[in-house]
Amino acid sequence: MKFGLREPPKFGISFGSNFVVMFREEWRQNVDFAKKRHIMMFPIMLALVTMIITVGLRFLTGDAGIESAYDTVKAAEAQAEKAFTWNELKIGLHLSLFMFSLGMGSFAFIGRNVVSQRASGKSYLLASPALLPLELPPVYLAYYCKEVAFYLCLILSPAVIGMALGILFGHITELSVPLLLSSLPVILGCMLVTLMQGLSISFLASAVWSRYRFGAWLVPLVAVLAGVIVAIDWISLEHAIIGLQVQLTHKFILLPIAFLCSLLVATFASYLVPDDFEVRVSTRSELFDPVYNKLSFLGQNQMRTLVAKEIVDVWRSGTLFKMLGSYCVPLLFLLALAWLADFARFPIPFNLLSYAPFLGFFGFNFYSWLNAVDSPDFLNGLPVRVPQLLRAKILVYFLMTTWISILFLILMAHLLDQWAGLVPALLVMIANSVYIVALSGLLMGLRPNKAIFDTQIMAIFWVATVIPLVSLFLLSFTQGDMSLYANQFEQVRAGGVAAESTIYDSAQAETSFGGIVAISVGLLALGGTFLLMLERRWGRAAFEN
Image: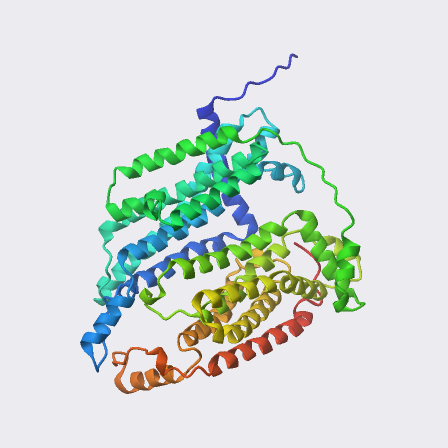
C-alpha cells in the first residue's frame, strides 16, 4: 500500500468546515463548563436587564416629567440640564461594546497555548494546523467569524430582544418608551459592525505582536497614540467607531462597507499569524524562598507557606499581568470617565463615594483568575484542607489589589477635588472587597468560573451583592445623609408613588457619612462571618478544579 501526503484543502472548503465545527466546539465547551440551562440563563437575564433599561430610558433622557412642586420652571430646567442626550446614550453603548470586543479579539496569542496546555489528550480546533494538513489563514478567519456569530447569538440578539420587550411593555402599560420597534434592526446592525471592528483590530494587533519582535512595543505605542488622538478630538469618537457613526448620522451605506472592511482586516491578520506551534521552554530563578522571606508579617505558619506558593504560581504561570489587567482596566475606564465626562450633565450626582463600592465588586474577576492558574488536585495528598487554601487565595487577592484600589481612589479624589470623602471611600472599598471575595469563596469555593453558572448560586450571589452595592451607591449621592431618603419615603407613603418632591440640593446634605459607615461596618462583619463559615462549608471537600 502506498501512502502519500494529503494536500491542504482549498481556502473556502477549509473555512466553511472549520467555522461549523468551531461553532459546535464553542457550544460544547460552554455546556461542559456549566450546563445547558445555566448557559441560557445569561441571555435571558441580559434580555430582562435590557428591557428594564429600555423602560427607564424616559428617566435618562428627561422625558419622565418629574418636576418640583415649588418651582416648576426651575425644576424643568435642572432636569433638562442633567438628562442624557440620545447621542450620549449611543456613545456609551458603542464605546462599551467596542472596548469589550477589543479585549476579546486576541486570537493570535492562543494557538501555542492550546497546543501546550492539552488536557487528557483533548485538543482544540484552533490548534489543528499543528496536527493536520491545514493552512492557518482559513482556520483563524473561521475562528474570527465564529466569535462574531457566537457573540451575536449570546449578547447582541438578547439585548435587542430585551429592547423589543421593553417597547411592548410600554405599549401594554401605556408608559412612554422613547424607542421604536422599527429602529431595532438598525441598532442591531450598528452594534454588529462595532463588535466586528473591535474584534478585527484586536486580532490584527495580536497577530503583529506574535509575528514581529518589534510588535511588543509597537502595538502598545499605537494603542496609546490612538487613545490620545481620540481623547483630544483630533479624530472624533464617531469617526473612529463606524457603528456609532452610522447610528448618529444614519448613513446606512456605511454598514456593508464597514462589514467588509472588518472581514478584510481579519483576513489580513489571519495571514500574519505565525505558523510556529513549537512549545517554548522557559526557566526562572528561585522564586519561593524570596517570596516566603518577604511575607514575614504572616508569621511562621502554614498560611505563610500557602500564600507564598500562590504568589509563586501566579508569577510562574505568566498570568500576573493578565490578572492585574482584568482588575485595572475597569478602574482605568472609570478614571477616564471622570476625566472626559462633564459630571454636571449627569442625571445623578456622582462623587468619589459613588465609585468606591464598585472596587470590591471587581474583585470577583480577580478571585476567579486566582483559581484558574493551576489545578489544586495534587494537594489531596498533602496535609492541607480546602478552607486553608481558600483563605490563602483571599489573602493573596488583598496583597495584590489593595494598593491599586488605594491609588485609584487617591487619583479620583484629586481629579474630583473631593479629599473630604477619601477616608470614607477607603472604608467602603475595603468593606466591599472583604465582603465580595469572602462571599465568593463561601458560595463557589475553588470553582468560581463554573459555580457562577449554577442558577441557585447565581441568584444568591446576585441578591447578596446588589443590595449592599445599590444601598451604598444611593447613599453616595447625599454623602451619607439619609434624611433626604427618609423625607422621600414619607412623601411616598402620604401621597403614593406619584408624590412630588423637591430636587436634591447637595448643600442640604449633612456630610456625616453615618449611613455609609454603618453599611460598611455591617459588610465587614458579614465578610468575617463568611470567612469563619468556610470551615463548615468546605471543611470536608476534596481539592478539584
